[in-house]
View 1 (cartoon, rainbow, N blue to C red):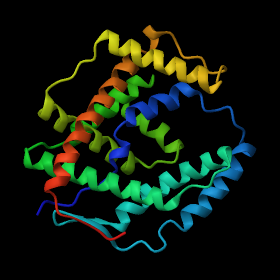
View 2 (spheres, rainbow, N blue to C red):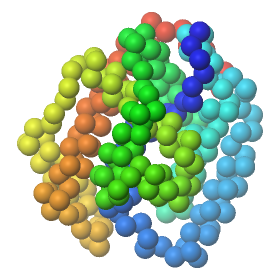
View 3 (cartoon, rainbow, N blue to C red):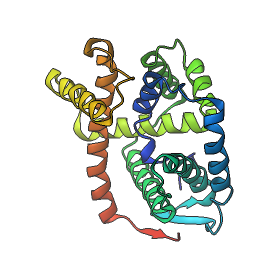
View 4 (tube, rainbow, N blue to C red):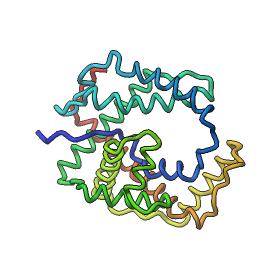
Length: 249
C-alpha cells in the first residue's frame, strides 16, 4: 500500500485560472462592512460542516478517503456557496454540495492511483516550479509571494501546495495519456471572445477585459486547463468502470 499523501479535489485543478481571475478581477471593491455579514454566515455554516460525517467517507480500491480530508474541502465549497447565496437569495444545496465534493475526491484518488501505476511522481521541485510559474502569471516574482497572496484569501500554505501538487500530477498523467497540448491561435481567440461575451451579458462594464495581447499567456494556461480537464474526465469514466468504490456518506 502506498504512503499517505494530502488529497485535494479535482475541482481545484484549474487553480491557475482561479488565481488569475482573482488577480485580474480587482476584487477590492467591497468594504470591510460589506464583507462582515458574509463572514458571519459562512463561519456559522462551516461550524456545522463536519456534523454527521463518518470518519471514512469513501473507499477507492481499498484506499480510504477520510473525514479529515473531506471536511476542509467541503467547508471551502460551502463558504463560497453561502457567499453567493447572499447575492442570489437562494440557499446552498448542502446535500448536492457534499456529493459533488465527494465525487471530486474519489475522481482525484482514481487519477492519483493511475498516475502511480504509470510511475508518475510529483516532487517538491515540481511544485516549486509550478508555483513560480503561477506567480509570474499573476505579476509576482516568486512562489513565496504567491503563497502570501493566497494566504490573504484564507488558504494556508499546506492546502495551496496540495492543490498545486494535484494539478501537476494530473497534468503529467494527461500528457502521458494524450501527449503534449498546444492550443492554436484560433482556439485562444475563441476563449477570449467568449470571455468578452460573458462579461457583456453579466453587465460588468466596470471591469474591462484587457486587450488580447496582454492576457494571451493567461488564456494559454486556461486552454491547457480545459484540455487537461477534458482528458482527465475521460480517464475518470474509464477508471470508475473498473474501480471498487464504497461510499459511506
